[in-house]
Image (cartoon, rainbow, N blue to C red; front, side):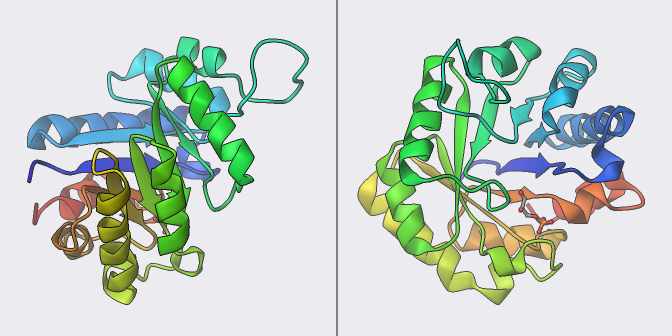
Length: 222
Ligand SMILES: O=C[C@H](O)COP(=O)(O)O
């Protein structure tokens, strides 16, 4: 197995807002260069351009709507985030849930604009359904563990291994990430040992006093 993929979602944490978004991205880039591990960041939408312009690392949107050009006030348009510098997008994050039809439309928009796609899910059946749509990644995150500091890879290992098994049967090209409560080296190690190919995480790094040191701890057992 190759190196994991790490995606850092800034959510709306103060520490990851505005100039903070750039500073955390710089820490991610430094750790990525030291380790060879791909680390992507997902800042708030208005910070995408700023982060992508100032730091050379993969920037993801936190959301994308399945709409095109036209009368869609307040929506997130694929061409706009692509031109802002995003290379990918989260879809259906637990804090931005969509209907199945909307997930499919968002994924279609991501593909149309050449954006990498991560569909977030909450259990094994929704992971299987998401994999059937053919995204680049699914990210399994039990909502009750998000932001809890209790790692999914230890609190609910079956949901990770079950997702890995389900996705392998449906479409082995789809890669599996897991998230919720991941912050330490042993959490990432456990996630990889369960068959996932990386993690989607937030609070443990974004809210850390020293995000670079927190990232170095996260990857120390890879
Ligand atoms: O997008 C990230 C996930 O919701 C996990 O958040 P967390 O690392 O704060 O638990």
